[in-house]
Length: 307
Image (cartoon, rainbow, N blue to C red):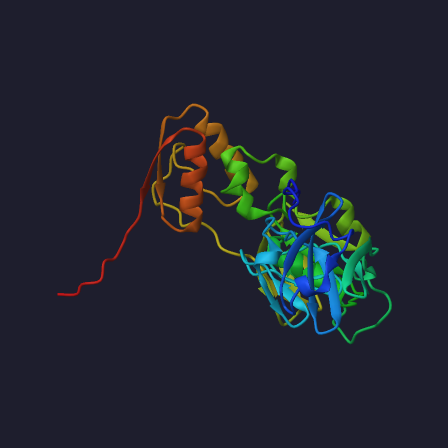
C-alpha cells in the first residue's frame, strides 16, 4: 500500500538535540532531512525509527512505548525500536531505522541503517516444520501468515489460494480512501508482485476451495482438482450477508471489483441507502458523501429497556 508521507515536524535530529530534552520513555517527533523520525531512549539506550506507521500513516510518536517496541495509537500495529521491524498486524511493512550517537550532553541521529535481512527469505536456519503450507485466503491475514513464515525461516513451499483475481490487497481502502476517490488504485496492493517471487510464495487465484480432506491432507478445488498440503491455514475472512431478493440495484462490498462497481454506479446516482451501520457501512457512507451523494444508513438498533 502506497501513501503520501506527511509533512515532517519537530527538531532536526541530525543537527542534534540536548539529552536533557528527551526523558526516558518519551517519544519525540523530529526529522532527518525530509523524513519523519521518532527518537526515544530507555536507560542509556537510544532508538530512532521512522515516525509514521506503515499501515495508515499513524503518528508513532503519539503511540505507546512498551519495552523496546512502540505501538501505533490508531490500529495498534507494533514495531521494534531496535530494528524498525513490523512485529504485529495490521502493519505489514517495516519502518526505517537510524543510528544514534550521544556526544556529551547532545544526541545525534546519524545515517539510516540498511534494511534488515529479515525482510528476505531466510535460509540460515532450518526449522522442524511441515513439508508444505497451504493458506486458504489471500487477504491481509493470509498474506501476513505467509510473510511471517518466511521471516521466521520456514523454507518449504507456501501456496495461497483465493478466488479473488486481485488479491492480496488492502481491503480497508475499498470502503475508505479509494471509494471516496481520494486514493489511486496503486495504493491497493499489499506488495508488488516481485515481493512474492523473491520469497517463493505462490498465489493461486480464480480458483475456490470447495472442500477439505484432512485425512488425506488435501484440499478440493471448484474445478474438480485436488492439492496436497503438509499444514493448512484457513484465513477466509467474512462475506456480506446477502438479501434473498437480488437485482442490479443492490450492490455488496467485499472485493476490489465490488468497490469499482459502487464507484461506477455512484457516477449516475443521486441517492443511496446503506444497509448496516458497522464500521464498513459508515465508512462507505462517508466515502459516498465525499462523492456528493445523498446517503441514508439503515440499521437495526436495539435500545435497552430500563422501565
